[in-house]
Length: 289
Image (cartoon, rainbow, N blue to C red; front, side, top):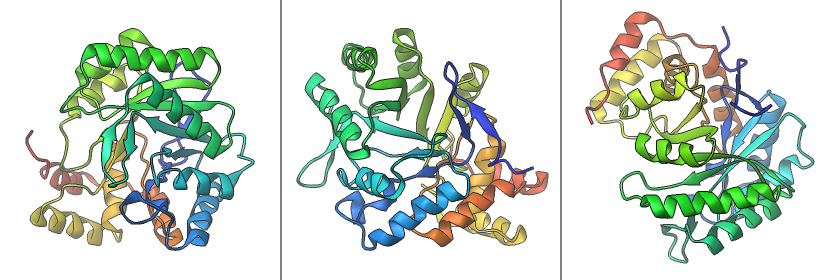
């Protein structure tokens, strides 16, 4: 079965996302800063993704900053009616290219308007509030930030709210304030600290969107992943994506690339089914957290 053709209904909305989307972060320049080396290729990647059936693009106006969203607009506007663009707020880039929290009322409002302007949209279908699962914010700051987004939702600038880079406790607190339609966290074969969290979200019919499918692998782990990939006549990235799709039905993958060739490979990963023996070997690789 082609897991990429499956659609996952986003709870409380009319949105149905295919289980393999596209993460647009890498479309800007090195270090996610400035313009890409080859803008024509970046545009081709986006147009090819949509042509191949992708209906979920993940982005943020702090990619570039502004550059990635401007490329998305240039490549795809006017947007296909079934395309959902998911963006993030809560962080910003400094002149030193650092990533820093941006959770004040003014920063959040400005970020929403920047996303709307650079994507040329009147409303944002899903906005993820990006936090720091290790350092907070405290509940007071989180509640205030969510209320800012809720006020913008009442004004019609936002349709749905998600959270990113959060603990299960932060998610639970946020969900008491407003419906949370998706959670976006780092998760892959070796970084599985969200295993229980994913199961909780699955039971609640909440989408889980993992990033960094190949992040954090040590040498021996990469070697075993490579061995499994060769046995399946696949790339390591294809195996990593296929593993995510088999892990839980609420997982939506958003692999990113700046290459049309790699895009096609990533989307093909949805057709792979990892056999039980190979799955056992991959499941043995995860770090204990």
